[in-house]
Amino acid sequence: MAEPSARRQRAEALLRRCTASFVDIPLASGHEVLCLQEESRNGGPAVFLIDVRDVAEQTCSMLPGAITAATFERECLARPEEVLRSICIPYCTIGFRSGMYCRRLLSGSLLPAAPVDVRNGEGVVLWSHDVGRFADGAKQLHCYGAEWDVAAEGFSTSVYTRGEQVGALPRFVQSVFSYGMAWLRSLVQRLCC
Image (cartoon, rainbow, N blue to C red; front, side, top):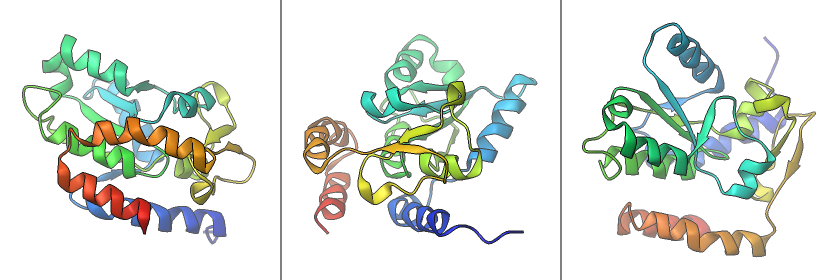
């Protein structure tokens, strides 16, 4: 087996760092997601692959079979029993925002109870390395910020400038309040350190 590229090794290190607060939530790699989607097509549990990134990031590309968080939340209202029996896999760039969304799912704030199977997707950066294709064959992705711009070779990337990241922060902080103050303190520590 070939040695992972330096970019992939950096992506793995970022994943470990960004998901350190969510060690109790299992990760779902790109290959695992594809297998779960195939099992679902063959009669297994439904899989909700949930893109929790901003619209600008989603416009660049999404994972095959993914829906936005807003669409998922409408599904929670329309078909809560089906969602509770499904496998829910939020994803973002590298696992931090999706880990926070997992916490929100597990808290029961979106559904009458917490779904049984919630996994944190490893994100679009590692998907570029492991799967190599996005919905509609896209070979581009939005990496949120320059720090996370370690997509696989052959992909074009976009990142928010520091000012755009600050502009996106109020929407993210608003969603954090639904997770509690401990998560807000964790977020501030990550942004400031």
